[in-house]
Image (tube, rainbow, N blue to C red; front, side, top):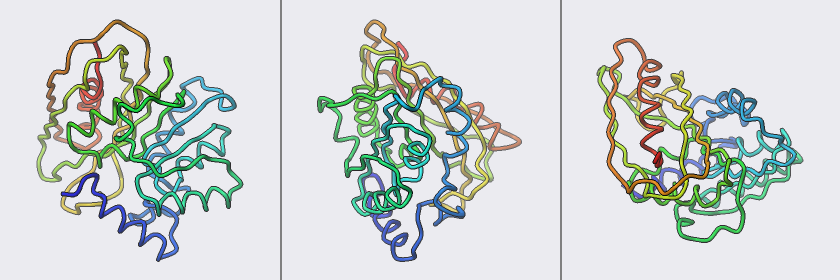
Length: 257
């Protein structure tokens, strides 16, 4: 498996450009640029955060062709957005310009930012279905380190992601690791919904979409990295499964002291 599923992403953005589409979601049943997977989650959560868009600095990583970044900028947020794929960023710049939106787009591997002193910190960092393509413990640790370094004290970290589960099985198991010890505490506010759409990579699996919010606040040094596992059973629906596993996943994905 190539790191970050990069060949699949490169192929997808070539197809988007060739077929005159505007976003990843259009390849998988979406109806247009504004119909992106994390929109409902953002519409639900953003009003609860008490942020004034006029002064809120936002970073979206894994932005793709920019539907999430454009959604945020259209609402007055000050947005920077990055993606690993140059073709995606080229398309994102075009779509933002067509909408009269000012967004700072750049090609960037966010995992490579771990250990690089930040030149800017953000009030809000957004992941719109990027985390699911960062699959190794080492790369996820780098991702979370890069986010921690770039999130202001009191800032928020929003994640929308998908998990594959068997449609036949009623038992699912996840195993996660806490990120390395740090001087910040992460407080999880999980929100979970079942996904109505088919998964993008496997027609044989069901998809569970999870939205979670983390906030950063100062605290003493946390404990060293530890392993943590969780399991959930759902006899009725992916939504039930989501509700049961979202909180332990949120706890395990970042140090909680």
